[in-house]
Image 1 (cartoon, rainbow, N blue to C red):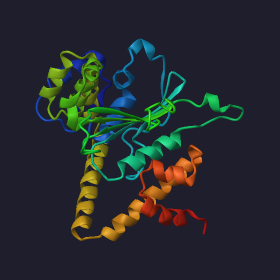
Image 2: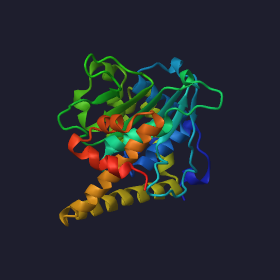
Image 3: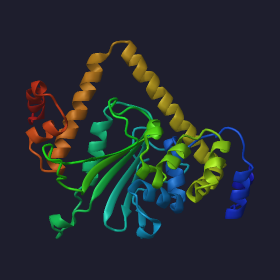
Length: 310
């Protein structure tokens, strides 16, 4: 049994062990279970990431409340979105941070669903003006829109004619790990490029280079080392990687077998769920919801019929 399993390491011991680590990482931060474990166990790392993603200083981060903690090392349902980080920031803002490096399709629709589910949770007696701003932040490693080269994109509801923001309380940000070379000056000032390199790191040598100039990376590195020594967490990281491989294999097999009809049916269900959520959570009309999701006019009558109560 490793030393990390026989006694609780103090910070100096963790740093010392990390500094002697070499070779390939067992599991990096693109493994969503490892990502969740580090962010849940080490609030300093989570605060550092939030500061970079929102472009705010650490002094502006008064409180960070993780509202969906899990028992680290325990098994989870493969289809659950439980690994997303649901956070209340400074008692007045909702954040949902998702590590999703595999392209499972319909990411746009799913991110909208997550955002709508979190938005607009009013308590009895509260008025609409007390709705907390809600932001979904996706960390991805695939081309979301092939025509775009943005590294860190911010999507908001706005007037398409004059670009006026309809509301700053509702938005989706996307950090694309494939587009680091397109980081803007602002992104680099906020060190988002450093976080991207940390997420993509495959070896301890890469992490050590990053840790030399970034205290949050150094803090994350020590936690990665300590967490990697926990057998229960390591097994769950392995299970997540196996699940992702199995899913990708099944998807590719389905494409090769020409099961287009089944895939199209899945697309319809995703859109129907997205329409219902937009209508429920944002009080959109059926037409507004379909337009917001970009459903072609030629297909809208079919969706309208499917939405009718049976």
